[in-house]
Length: 167
Image 1 (cartoon, rainbow, N blue to C red):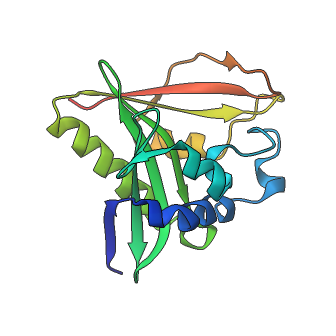
Image 2: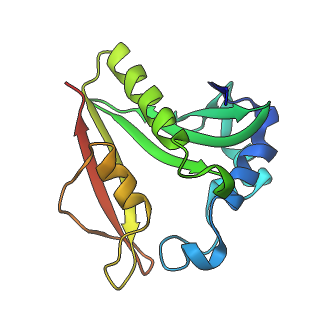
């Protein structure tokens, strides 16, 4: 299986939204995120957030992964003052558990190292019952450490911050 990782373009917006919407079910995400699923759930919303090339208004970059010229996943990340932050990663349900997420995260980590960064951050959520989203196990497997914090949101879920030292 030959995968291609590349910078996203504005032409990829429909495919990025499709990946986001097919990465889970509405029932599966219930209690773990906002009801509208945010910027990546609507081509119109993503287009509004697009700034230039593969960048969003907040400075985040988007990379996509293609298999047979079809986008099957994406990752959103940005440089902060002292670290890289992974904001979002999504893989279509059919392509999950095949190492594609690992490839995307490793790509971003290598980019961070190339740019002189040694600290990565990301997060996931837990529902009101304290059950973490399925990404929790993925981040642990990737070597990220749960900071132990649970940050309240204005919704019924909490955010779980993760950190990883790349040294």
